[in-house]
Image (spheres, rainbow, N blue to C red):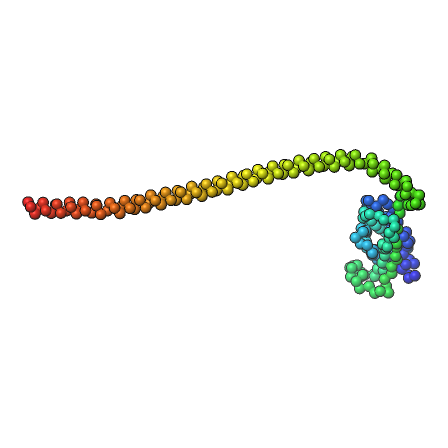
Length: 245
């Protein structure tokens, strides 16, 4: 055991215990004591960082002082047959006299100067759950089966009624959606018909305007020669009248 491990005192010394049920955040405290006459820097690490929230996870402990660290286990589905392999490590080092940047100190620290203490995570169930786990499975099986049968038989009518109400709701929702779809289809058809009528009306208006313009051109072109003939006849008559007189 290294010198720093002898100086630094951990409470608890070996195991971090978490008491279930684990449907909510479970918090346990880890206390670090520094009975030496030098400042000690610490850093807490875990093998399962996504499962735990550690506050504070690093810092400095003054001589003769102590720090309480809160380790918060996040909710999860607990399996009593699964053995916990989660571990924590408290890494420590004597603080240099002049070290304003702790991150740089940890980065530049030599391996022989680093000390660590390892802790194992232990999950504990409430007493009623422990009693259920202590019962012989072969003896507990008939009781569990009968209770399961009772619960299933009692739950069948309610589940059936729930299924019926849900089916009715689904049918009503389907009918409503079908009616909305038919309405939308009718509106779409009406819009298409109106568009066709508007296009036809526009085409007919264009045809009428084109024919009127053509007729005006034809009448103008036909009336122009006759007008010229009348004017020529007037001039000829005028000149003939002068010569005769």
